[in-house]
Length: 463
Ligand SMILES: Nc1nc2c(ncn2[C@@H]2O[C@H](COP(=O)(O)OP(=O)(O)O)[C@@H](O)[C@H]2O)c(=O)[nH]1
Ligand SMILES: [Mg+2]
Image 1 (cartoon, helix red, strand yellow):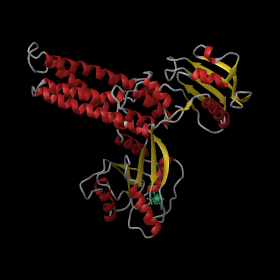
Image 2 (tube, helix red, strand yellow):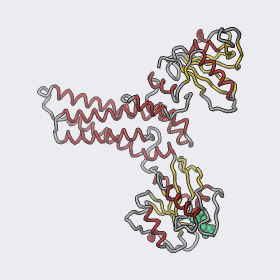
Image 3 (cartoon, protein in one colour):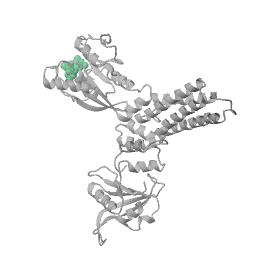
């Protein structure tokens, strides 16, 4: 962390501006080797802008300079900078070459090319952001809906971190108290865990339960979900796909088996980026191309958040429908009785499964009239967890965080059990320390190098 790093912070390609960032103990010296303005940047105050030229030395002897670009240098002095270190940001003209050449000159002057997320990693290592906040930076960059962006901003501003940190503080107090009683067992009345500590353990555990209840929805908002439509040929999948997208995208015909490959489109449902995929009808395929489509349709089920099982509501429910139903066992299924504008033949009762599983919801829709589409969208959102979620501020969107909180909660359940059975205080304390360590994986009070590496590998270079 002692060296000085540099990278292009903006996306490559033609554009208005391109920003090259330098950070580290030597960043002002390195920047001055490249910058020609009215005064050296080393003399600048923090949070100031300086117009000038970026130059490259023409030969190793240092005789003569070539102008690379006209730039504005922004100087931030540590610790009041993004990374916490002295930082210079050169705003270059947009396009790849000016920024690339300025970066080259900075490297020639001694800066090292930054790795992915290394500026943010430094912000974390210097205590400018905790780990959950640093991860929110990447979430913000990757957000595809306004809700995902709001969620990331709330996490970046520390809403989740504060909730977890306060739980950490409370558990640390409880653990210290239990440990003190163990150490001075004779003085403070034996091994009983006091009632107020037991209450505290239960309260913290309840708070974790509340946080985790909203986690599936928050994750759906953060990452988006995949929702495949499956069903027999002619059930009305492509029509529904089009109706949900509000445009004609997939081919609709009267001839069964026309959709031979899947067609995917993005849409937004209650702030979640949903990748909807229309698939070939699942049945015994007549041709080879079709068989391939059917195979792919079944493959899309893996990793799908919810499967939309489309059944022709205007036709009898048949053994092939039943066969498909069996393939859906164990998935989270939203059944759609399509063509509700026609007289109903198949009903919610007809959707009897073979192997014990049942659709979570059944909704009647008509792609032709649009009836039921809103109910379908709502049912989908509620299956994704919208019902359990409170607000998105302070929500647990990152599965890594959810795993750690789950771990902490399990340890607290064990701690409460041990306390209830009047087991030795050492055991209660051990479980409390385990819970604390798990919470520390979220805020970063307890993380390995390895974990940090994995987290920051997701970042862009220059962030
Ligand atoms: N009346 C009515 N017909 C529909 C509706 N949805 C689909 N269809 C018709 O059912 C047939 C098959 O539809 P399609 O979407 O291609 O089914 P897929 O094979 O499951 O993709 C076509 O003739 C559609 O016009 C609907 O909501 N109402
Ligand atoms: Mg189709």
